[in-house]
Amino acid sequence: MTQITIERNIAYDDVRKTYIVTFFYEIGNDGKPIRKRKSFTNKKDAQAALRKFEKERERGQTVLPSKDLLGAFLDYWLNDVKSINLAQTTIYGYNNMIKNHIKPGIGNTELQALSPVIINRYLTDKSKQLSMSSVRKHYDLLKDALNTAVKEDRLAKNPMDNVNAPKFKVQDKVVYDAEQIKNIIALSKDERLEPVITLAGYLGLRRGEISGLKWQHIDFKNQTIDIVNTRTQIAGTPIEKDTKNTSSTRRLHLPTPVSETLLAVREKQESMKSTLGKAYNDNGYIIAWENGLPFRPNYLSEMFKKFLEKNNLPHIRLHDLRHSFASVANELGISIHDISKALGHSNISVTSSIYTHLFDQTQKSAIDAISNKLTD
Image (tube, rainbow, N blue to C red):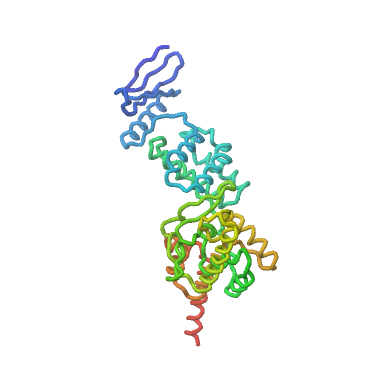
């Protein structure tokens, strides 16, 4: 094979009848420039490719060619980049998406070969199998991961920038009104779920926050309750972790009905401690079995569902009592700022986006009331 240099960084192979372009990247660890070659069938294409490369290099937009696969990169991204700052539950969810969906779908695609077309086809396929809210999570994961690839000079640009985010309709929240909440609290009297329903109905606590409550977090004298940790489950295994964010760590007023319910629970626990002695597992949890061991968080939801069925009550999730708390507070004219603080949201916009439908109804009522007044 004979190669003839016809101009800077372009040679002609007179045997294969191709033009070979040499692309020079940065200086390697050995002090020598890293270079890659690519063949073209005609001179104009070779020249255009070289000019494009050199312009991108001047702008700092060139990346070394790589055969790395998307699947392998996502493993690195999750385990070595994201895991430091993510909760175990989030890591578990991301790992499931990568392992069960993205890898089988496009995991064997070379990272640098990814394109909006490939990604759009993947998201379209997923939309036939999963809910649109789940597909949106795949979109968000890929965008975040590929942003890391750009920052690490593995990609010149993120192909997700040219992929439209999947749209999905946020379902209206199913809530109880004030009378229904009063009724369900009354029906739960002396039931295992009484403190759970009371805490969710009166304070709007999350299931994990209720599960993680300990007696040390309650100040009966000053009527306060501190939300500082949560209990959740990963693959059936309960784990304890910090609250969702800094705003979720909060101190709330402890109203008298909640205080009375908790005092009754503590009295029962003290009685069981005396009865069981050393057999009692004194871990300090408020929501616990007779032997002191805490309930699995998922079991609370299971009990709640059975409780509704037994009492012929409208079906809602345990978490919907939190939404019901927000709905009643909104109807009473409580400011969105105060509702957000009570719920432990990171900011008002989060509260507003979650309860858009509920708050829109209040705005309608307010506008109608003003309109009626002005037209009297």
